[in-house]
Image 1 (cartoon, rainbow, N blue to C red):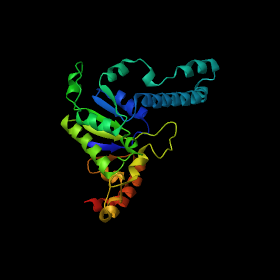
Image 2: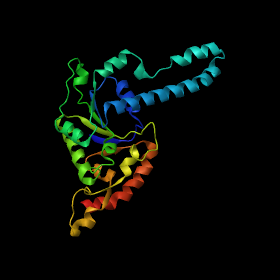
Image 3: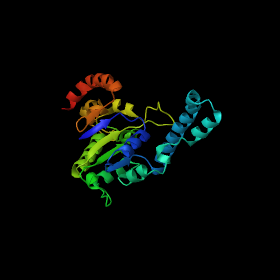
Image 4: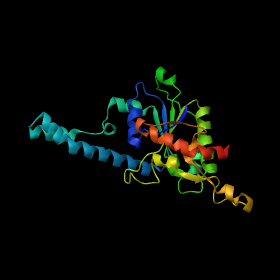
Length: 254
């Protein structure tokens, strides 16, 4: 099954779920950014969560134990699971692969030649599972480029679906917010509601086709040709309204 999910606001949420799976499932994370950018986001998220935990720990511990020394001993030891060298983390890392594709050309090339990695030490239960492919921030990668159109997105979506079908894996698309600017319109699940032109502005269109070629369509309408939409309960109503709004645009493309 190919799906779009809005369950994860950031990549840390996704990584935590991958790590906690029991038994572990082979998972490939295709990151649509450079390694350094991904590392910066991940470290910022971990530091943010640790800061929140430390800020709330004294008040919580005070309700349980009034001894301040006990509070100071417990609070600093709180660390995110990714920073703890546990056997669970070590085992999960054997089933998780990362690939970094900072441009649309790199992403399409990687997906075109994608083959399922083998896990020589994988258990029998893990081998029997087809596994997962998650592509992070595929829309953010296209946003701001000439490929952020019906034509460009369709080409990338089709290539991704072909890679998943070829390797018998489930494919998920995730758009993560920028921890440094969570309200940024260029990152996050809100990009699924963006309107894009049918054709790239770089393509010359004759006068007769100018009106048609410059029409817009919702990104989610394009993606629904290949993907099902999974959303949280709090977003179902919003998604329903959104689908009703783009229905006419979808009919235009049929």
